[in-house]
Amino acid sequence: MIERFFWQFFSYFGDVAYWLGFSIAFLLIYPLLSKSDKAKTRWIVVELIPIVLISYLIATCLKFLFLVPRPCFGLEDCPLTPSFPSGHATIAFAFSTVIVARLRERKYLLFFGLAFLVALSRIMLGVHAVVDVVAGSVLGIAVGAAGVAARRVRLNHFYLRKTIHLLCIAIIPIEFLFGKNITAALILLTSLLYLISEILRVRKIKFPFFQQVTKACYEQRNLKNIITTPLYFASGIIVLLLLFPKNAFYFGAVAIILGDGMAGIFGKKFGRIKIFYNRRKTLEGSIACFFSTFLPFLLLTNFLSAAILAFFAAFLESLLKKYENFILPVGVGTFSLFI
Image (cartoon, rainbow, N blue to C red; front, side):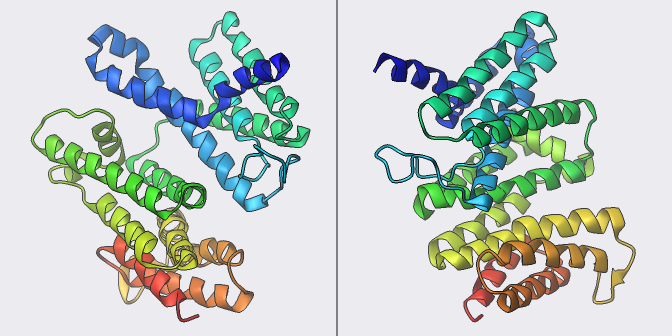
């Protein structure tokens, strides 16, 4: 009993619920700090918290990609999520990497010892195999190091915006874990906070976190009015969640998050051939949209249906000039009902 309590104690340091609580509490306290304290702790807001949460989202997406059963499968109190990789180990090594890289003193290497105990606790509690925690540890270090490097190599507005766009793929495992109603409520709450932030930003009144993200993602000339693109995105996802069958939601979400995201990135980076019916889009971007949706669609349906849906998603994305964040997911979700 005492041994189990010992390992459960260390396991909490890799629990996403712990980090969500810490993040919310810190973000509420941060605006109340003095200027000097804000300067000293700003890295926690812009570096530590985002990297930890992103590392967990990546680990969760990988879990549902590999679908490896846990060693405790079928036993009482066994977690419902797949096993590989360990989310706790990922989080523990991600935050340890950020702290060591950011503070650069030998004493902070002890955080890697804490991360090791978190990873070991998952094995000792019987909820993960060794390969799960090793993979999670490597993933955590990689995401932590990449996050620190990205902060030092400043991304331009477009690529930062697309990176955040792609990370929204976490909506799918969140829906799987918590259901459509809770997921829709979280999206609605986030959208409301974003809208309040945008109204205040236009009126030159400060609002924490959301305004910083908006300013980082858009060029100054686009910031004169409220940025409505994320609201269309949220509306499309909520409509899919509440009004469509589960598979239609998955098809539509993949189309707007992966398809549209990769089309934008490849179109900007490699796009040379303009599409004759929409000079804003490129053939290279449409090809990227097709393949980035076709492969995930294969997990949900047969080869032919996946190919037809991916072609439709790529074609619809290439057509749209306005409101694509709403029309694309709802359009693909609707079309999937007939395939």
